[in-house]
Length: 173
Ligand SMILES: [Zn+2]
Image 1 (cartoon, rainbow, N blue to C red):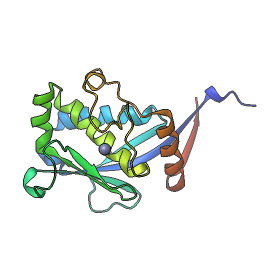
Image 2 (cartoon, rainbow, N blue to C red; image 1 turned 90 degrees about the vertical axis):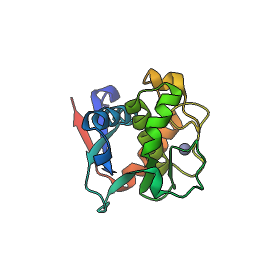
Image 3 (cartoon, rainbow, N blue to C red; image 1 turned 30 degrees about the vertical axis):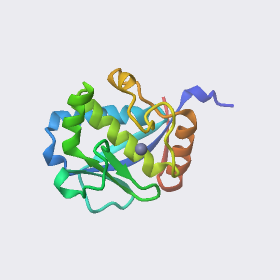
């Protein structure tokens, strides 16, 4: 038998960030790093792209301004995503507003919002959990410490889902 710890199994996931021209590049890069860390923790490597509208095999996160949505979203909503689809939305102008309100860095709030909404695309409906990155209301302390992660069960569900449509690359190190 191979010792399991000698194998690094990485599943790749392509995520397109659309509307990113509103975001300062350094902020976006840091947010992507924060989101990617959440996924790396469960063995998923995110490949970021900006190729929007061509979502074959890729998930899409749309960063939209407040003018582009109806007033039906509660003013505490930062983003939304319907499970089973490939497109999530983040209300980008609220990222700045909420980061001030919560005393969190913008890049941290944006990064975890991306991780959370992409999580909804990959998990079954009603996938909020009492702790971790899928909490309905962001855990400010753990977010500030950059410690939000998926629960073990969520990690397993996501891998199961991804392995259905993404190639699995097995690398030995
Ligand atoms: Zn949610």
